[in-house]
Amino acid sequence: MWGLGDGLAVRHSTRLSVVQPTTVHPMTTRASHSDSIGDAVPDDRAPQPAVTARAPEPASRAGAGDPIVRRARTSDVPDIKTLVDVYAGKILLEKNLVTLYEAVQEFWVAEVDGRVVGCGALHVLWADLGEVRTVAVHPSVKGKGIGRLIVDKLIATARELELRRLFVLTFEVDFFERHGFAEIDGTPVTAEVFAEMCRSYDTGVAEFLDLSYVKPNTLGNTRMLLTL
Image (cartoon, rainbow, N blue to C red; front, side, top):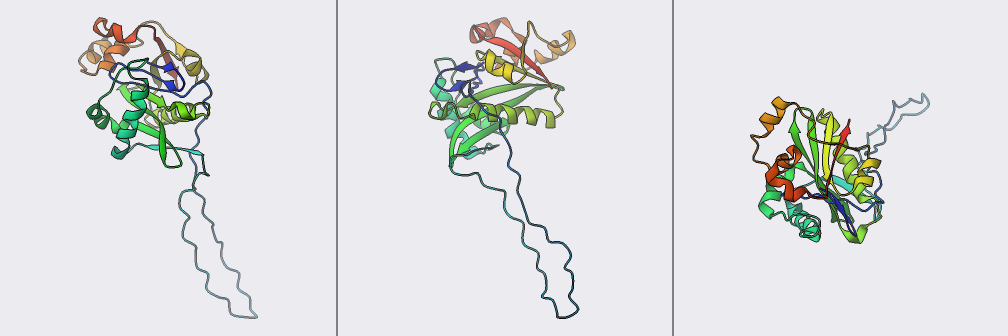
């Protein structure tokens, strides 16, 4: 589920999602640039020095204060936990360290000048269906577009995985509408898929299915879906 305080937070029962405030800006992945050298044109009048190709330049670095969104590493988990704790007990449910370590491969983090200031996760629910989870942005960088960068990256990752739909359970309806999500009623899967998904022990899947035992976790949240 999502909730906006000073920062942006998306909550998810045992999976919390935090999102930067309303003013979140699209994330871009900076491509590396390298100089290419064409064929040398010889001069008959004088011997030409050998042309040595320059080594490719490293991925371009952001300027001071510019956010970078990258895959999370295990060393980022304590910082992710800190972000989650900012909203835990308010609009988000707590997440313990072991849960975050178990899911670290699903996370992306936003980093500014070496400091992790935002996070978000993409969880695959079914063959064509994923969920945006645990999006959190630190209040100190509200209005910097961090939440939007993270969600844009999660959407791009979903497309790479060939997912066709993305679900989110959120308080931040306006924010997600700007990303193309729309409110839905019920659970957008067939009865057969519903039965298969009920086999999952993941609390977030139970929330997606709107099972009765997780309803206390979802009160006040809006169910939204994005078709990719």
